Length: 114
Image (cartoon, rainbow, N blue to C red; front, top):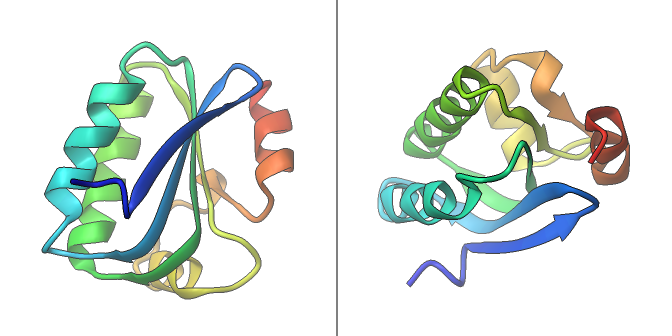
């Protein structure tokens, strides 16, 4: 069950995916399946990583694949990583695309028209 790591809600018209805890090799696959099954119909997706306490390479690969698939499908996407924290640090160390990283959920939603 992925409920302890992923929750879904809406912010405006955007699908909001809240990830929390440790995202690693043990759960990244299940989290990815849960997200993909839920966001198929959404035009805008915000993924909130502000309460992620650990993100390993499997988590980074998951996010990279999700973002790539969402962009290929024409879906506007932002990863909300806050001002600092494990997810932001890990994604920056991996040279993740800065243009999709956001520090603030409300601002990211407003930018995307969510």
